[in-house]
Image (cartoon, rainbow, N blue to C red; front, side, top):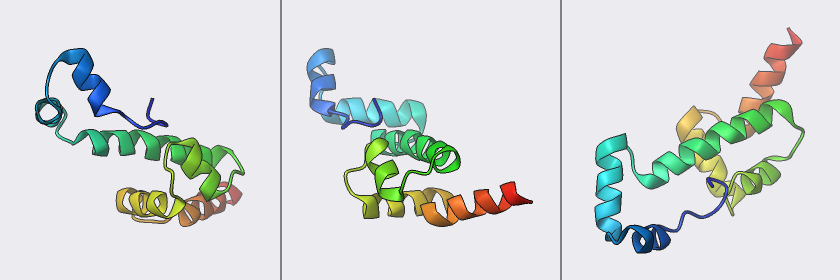
Length: 97
């Protein structure tokens, strides 16, 4: 589900709660926003793909649910303190030793 757009409207229709109520409850219980949680799942999957495939950063961005590779790179850098390319380079360097 994290590789597709999370539709808060559909969740609200199914639960009969408002978007703000759903968001508030989610943050209260998880400590993060729905978007932060979704991005954390996407980044975890992206790290696995960077480690195990030869897919380009753009292909990985699309595979894990980001429609823009630049935005993906920014989110990845914020989460991991390195770009996706640098992350892959470090993985390959560690595997070569």
